[in-house]
Figure 1 (cartoon, rainbow over the protein chains, first blue to last red):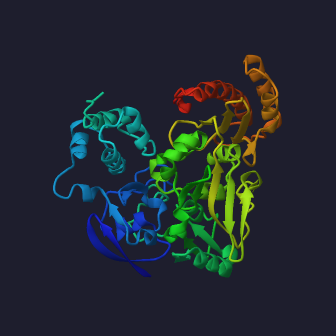
Figure 2: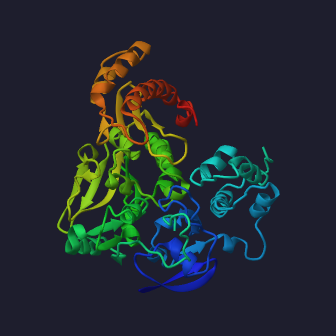
Figure 3: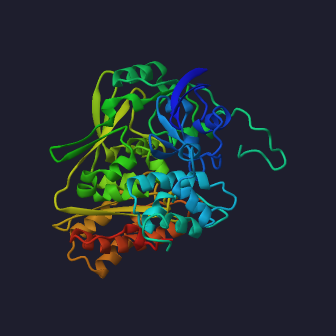
Length: 154
Length: 312
């Protein structure tokens, strides 16, 4: 066991981990963060997405020890006081049914909008090309995101 | 969690990779090399981890030690000097895509970087990791082969430079020696040139290549071509280059002659992504559209490679 420190959703945290533990599992099972989900465990589906130093990454492909001294942000972190505008838009446009992919997509798009507040539909598609939705379908997801870009729902 | 069968859902418990290993994060190259010298093939270097962690999870790799190189500052170098771009081994695909020099001088590499994985993968995955994994479908290889990139390696005693044309030996096997680390990859600018990378996947966005063709062209109509996912290792297409570089002009007839040479250039297999026959056939289409599109690119027109293959 090794103790690591990280900043999780703007709060310093310490946690005991084994070197072969995956960040996703440590977040879910040791740090009480349930928004990132386990899907494919090989980086294809994007449902485990978290922000590492502001960038969307696959927490299923990162060892917990690699996150030492880094900033990790999850859905819990961006909605501490109230839902973000993007989350509100997801509700307004019925952008999720089962919700399994939603945290990953919301985080990936949160990063996109931070860098580029007025993305095109193409840029939005590219930013979540690695986030698979298998029930709602992408149209209401794109509509929700487009509603925030100043370009309106398509 | 995903491996639990139906009806056997268990209470969540602490999950880790089945294989155990030590983990070190040295801050200097020499420390990393000393660890590697001590553990030899039992130690593996970890950068982005997007391939490595999957391979460990699936039991294909069983290291005793992972040497995380992300703490080594000098491997983050992304330098432009004497018309040459040096890309340190910690540089990610996301950094390359955003880099103006890559956009301006190495458009073929830029195209390729954009096709790799997805945003979440490219934020971690490195160019060096891609060539060290050395799978037959590696998207960065056609670009590196066309630019005739150099792979920079270091061992505790010495440093050496390997032309990328001599780097790939077999699927997942490279010219890297057991005591060496790749410190970076350098590419020399080819003046007045343009390039294009065509990748066909089953769908656009993050799929591995069924076929990949990189084409580089200079203003005096000299061509370099290379492919991936079509042979055990990525390769230059020298027969086609020879034909194109010794004929004039590029017209439908010459393109047909080039396509006729494809069977002597590639040796595709049938796998879950495509059949051998399809790979052979689609290479002709890709070559035709790529050669046509690069004429427009070199005259300054913006061409989105993905659109050339039907953005599906």
